[in-house]
Each structure stands twice: as structure tokens, then as C-alpha cells.
Image 1 (cartoon, one colour):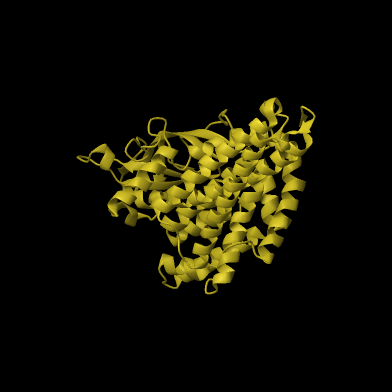
Image 2 (cartoon, rainbow, N blue to C red; image 1 turned 30 degrees about the vertical axis):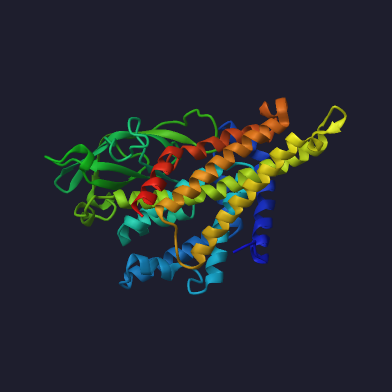
Length: 417
């Protein structure tokens, strides 16, 4: 894929009109936490039929699984136009385009949406039983309910599994859950939370214990969801803490049921697969941020006059603009590669996704900071959009694995080959 197709451009223009009409006027409220993003996201889902498409794909997948197909076969069968690469490409593009367009104005909304319909729903669909999928996944996929994916803890950070302390103690047919999670996207508002913890196993070192995934509902006894935390950027994405004190759950809330207890290594591989999905989405987010920063910088460079000349006539400003365009082109090509792989039924390896995420995050931060520099003192003021985009971009180098963890993943893969 070397350029957007005509049908993809039509989707992009329609989504851009929606964002400019329904999101842009509310950025101030979203930024100050006065307006949670979920109703606007639901409106977008309804406007473009995204909720109905999610329902149709879900029904096909469940029907296929009930017919005895493997989960991989069921997912392939559930994909619209799965036998046609062009249709698969359009489907992948239709997923990425809203991410790009939302990030031009409000990147935090993408984080809130992605964690709910992406990470949380995907965890249930990949690990859950048919009954669990029917019970929880569809409502999250359609945004009727909001999901949270809880892995990060105050003392773990990048050592997500080794440093994990949250635990599940088995008592007969029940489990007793204890622990805390932090930096949880959608945590304050989530209706459904996938809680990742370690099984208490006598004689097994804490770092080696099985990883289990449980589904929790808001309001369960002993389950506390805090209000939104204050943070540097992504203010339109509510982030909170979770506290579990002797939360009792049955086997029906353990993703995969009894079978999950016998799996080697527990849920580590599944969680890594979730990280892989999250990392590939960062390129689309970065493209939206970079595209908007370039657009705003070009406009300002033409209009801002210093020493009796538009600043766009000065070579140092031209250098910044040119580098922004290089980053935009590279990011767009990474997005095109993601679409092309999807069209051919393939996904990136973890190392490839890490390389994409590393470059995309760094490019977004560099371009956003240069946009602030183009604006000078004005760029440091919250009145100007580039100030928000500079703050929002920074977290791309942190969540879904820090830059340092991406480098580690890439290098380990290279050294193995």
C-alpha cells in the first residue's frame, strides 16, 4: 500500500468532519476533566455504524466457536470480507483512521477508547470461554460499557510480571483477590475490569507464579475505584487506581475457567500479545499528532511576521518544517504497512511492533516540541493547541512499554537471529 484509496479518503474526510464538529468544540471541557469522553465516543460509534459492525463480527465469531472452530479460525471467519485482501485492508484502515483523526485534536480520547474496546475486550475474546465472551465482551466492544485492563502496580512499572504483587488465593470453588493497581486507563469509570494477578502457589517463587486474569464488575464488595489522577497530559483519558481487599469471585470470573489454571506460564503470553496490539496502534496516534502539528506550524509560519518577514522564510524554521514532513511521511508509511500486513492476514512480531512504537513515539514528541518552538512564547501558552499536543505526546514514550523496554525487545530479537 503506497497511498490512501478513494474509499479510505472518503472515510477519513467523514471522520474528520465529525471530529471537527463533535470533538473540537469540547476539547476545553475534556482537557479539564469536566467531560468524560465516553458519550462522544459512543456518538461516533453510532454515527459510523461502528457499534453495529462490532455486533456483527462478534456474532460471527461466537457462532464459529460454537460450531467447533478454533479461536484463530473463528476470528478469521468473523472478519468481514476476510477472503478478500482489499476488503481486509479497508477494514484495517477503517479501524486506524478514527485513531489518526481523533489524535489531531484529542489524543486522550483514543487512549480511553483503545483500552476499552481494544485491550479489555481483546483480553476477554482471546482468553475467555464462550460464556464469558457473551457475558462481557459485546457490551465493551460497542461501548455500551467501559472497560479497563489492570496490569500496572505501584512497585512494578516495566517489570510488570516479575514485580507483580496482586494475588489470587484459591479457596474451594472461589478465589480471594487482593492487591492494588495504578495508572489504570478508564479506572475511575470502568464498568468491567480485567484484573491481572498471580496465583498463590506454595513452594513457587513469587516471580514464577501463574498469571491469571479475572473479570470484575463495578461495585463488587471490596473493589474500590478511585477518582481520576492528575497528570501531565492526556487529560481527556481518565486514569485511576484500583484497590482490592478480599474480593471473592467464582470460577466463572476467571478468564478461561479451570483450563487457565493448567496453562504453562499462566497468562504471560496473552498479555504480551496485548502489548503487541497496543504498540502497533501508537504509530496511528503519532501520525495524528504529527499531522496536526505540521498543519498548525505551517499556518503559523506563514502568518507570524518577525523582522518584517514571515518566519517561514527563515531557514531555521524551514528546517523544522521539513523534518516534520519527513516524520509525517515515515509514520504514514508505517501505518500503510500495518494495513498491508492485515490485508494479507499477518501481524507484526513483538520486536517489529516495538521498533514501530519506538520510532513513532520519539517522532511525535520531537515534532510536537518543535511545533512549540515554531510558535515561540505563544507555543508555551495553553491557548495554543501545540501546547496540549506536546504534553499529550510524551506518554507515547512511556505506556505500552517505555522506550527503554522497546530497545530491549528489539535488541534481544536481533541478537537471537
